[in-house]
Length: 457
Image (cartoon, rainbow, N blue to C red):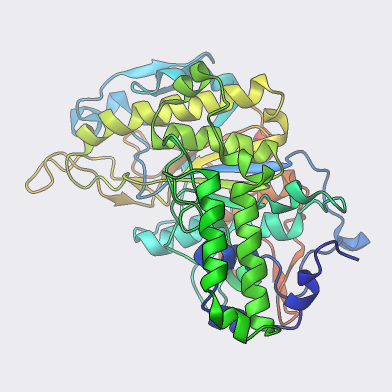
């Protein structure tokens, strides 16, 4: 029997009833959602036995808006200035023959630890469609499919030991810091598998989850606020025993316990070495990378670092001179830190956006040196969790305008990561109506496939 009696009460309510309960704030709702509905995890049958687990967790670095492949992981110096713009040079890496963008010197030192995918493609140029496709492997349609983070959480969760309250409170699926917003991450799996979006800024002196803890007051003041709120809650007293309010109260207390109890210390970066924090970069992205490492160390299964600002239709190169050094420092230090701690072998690091950007620079007015949406071919970086480092998979054309060799579709990449996480890519996802819904798409669904990335696993 669970040590938390309110869990049994949650089973009495429908999702709609819980959503109607106004006393739930945003963070409490997400925590409650993890407890709603039937248990969707299941053991595979002998006919669909899951492959060996190499990755225990995934850190997704989501470059929202679409990063350029030409200036990052697939430079084309021979294409000429109409394509390179002012970033004509490249950075040779520590793996012979592999070069990356000139503004990525830290990552150039670590190429033996990651592989580059230079022929990712889906042909979609709209943010919403491309985001959904890159995250789920499917095109939008009748079924709203879950993103990879929800699937990993549902099918690859590790049961917690009875009484291990701290581990149970740490959300298995976290977004740092803003919700991604362009698609429903949980899809048909429902609110139970929606990610916990922290809000806040991990570079602040006190990193607090928005809506739960104010960043500028002490824990004692937080406790006093809670006591005052309880005293003023006359409605709760009048409706004592109401099941819906019981759910609200339980979820609110769990959210407070996450942030004010021992479990909440996972979000407290103040105890980290100052020099290490500096190496990550004292900015929102760099400290989000550090927070992601702490979360997977403490049991989270899938952490997305949602970094915006990559939609550079105008003044692209000015933006790249700001964005790329921050990405280089944060992502490079994350990979190196995971390796130093012995965590990289069991943690996939996946860096991607919804698409790339046009290889040819838009120099005409009003763009003034911009790059537009481009889904024909773009790049991704993968490291750890069973992926071999020091390799390049696929090739784009001379000017980076189309796939020259080995197309990689989103479903290919997602299926490969499922395999490394011990999830059978051909197994059925737990659909609420019991329908057979394969974890990864196939040609029978009208989806292109180039095959899983056997070259680097």
